[in-house]
Amino acid sequence: MSAPQTVDLTTPLDEAAARALTAGTRVRIRGTLYAARDQAHRRLCELLARGEAPPFPLEGAVFYYVGPTPGGEGRAFGAAGPTSSYRMDPFTPQLLARGVRGMIGKGERSGEVVRAMQRFGAVYFAATGGAGALLARCICSAEVLAWPELGPEALRRLEVEDFPALVAIDAEGRSLYERATEKGA
Image 1 (cartoon, rainbow, N blue to C red):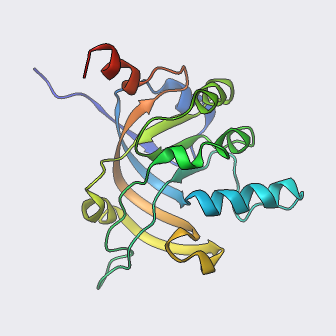
Image 2 (cartoon, rainbow, N blue to C red):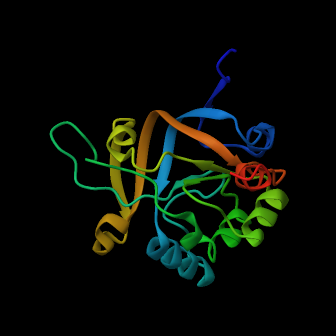
């Protein structure tokens, strides 16, 4: 039996590339990811509601739901494992409507988020929980873009190489989580 194919992706991610991915596909991501958790998402949505420009272009952006630990010598972070994605669900549909194409985290997403993914052509990637130190090795640099007072939850721009993830929910709404439930896993 041959190993599943891995797709190389470069960000920003356009709609055609997002829609071409299917649930279960392994990917390696290179380019820019935006690290943000729930408090940064809340502030970003508040800023947009006031009609202010976001601190980075939303079109084609890929968020990584992470709260990194400080890095050691020569490392942007010590550990950078994914956090539970459901905490970003209240903010996600409005960000997808503005062009965000991808999200990386762990765990299931709400029906509202999945419907928004289908409508706007976005994809949800799962990163391996518990492998934060290994994932941090794929992060070449990190820069705080906004809200440094949030500490590890500040909005950051990350440059990544060969960041491994799995398409957990594709732009058609197909979900590995549903497949696992159907199989009794």
